[in-house]
Length: 106
Length: 150
Image (cartoon, rainbow over all chains, first blue to last red; front, side):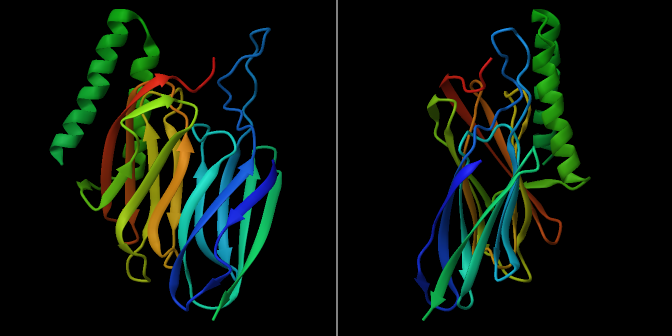
């Protein structure tokens, strides 16, 4: 799990709804594939994602193996005030990756 | 609404029949699993048609990464928002795709991602509002190259 990328505007009007796009590198091994010897390759996927604004939950999801490699998520958020969005990804190994983005309400 | 239940039942029934004929228990199994997930999500409620939009391409050339977009009419508010939105695929080895959770801070209740489709199949979306009401949408996606490895 690496290179979290988040796209959102730097500025918004109070109460404006913005679109957020996120992408992270991850193989999303489904647990369905077999290696050359015919052994099942164990499942290793990002199983959850969440987005908070100033500590308040905005959007989250539980992810299953049918989500493509390098999972992409697009959603919207209402911006009541200036603050910081936090994005958190977790995988089956318990690894956690997070990133933050500030937004200014003019 | 009884129609949907009947249809779901028929999918399971035909799946079972096909499996008995061809000897591929996976078909029946996956339909049963999808129905089990739907029943679990509904929790005794009846799903309504309308209000929920599931957008996917009619034909997906590459099943490894098929765009998926779901949205529920109306802006999220303290009084009305989508608590959970479940997406299932009836032709994949595992039926689950993702469960989205919105909040009063979500703005539009819309989410998009990219998913794997092993073969041509139905994708089902179910949205549960904070008051317990459930909406359903379904679409068939034709897949040219499957996307689950093997």
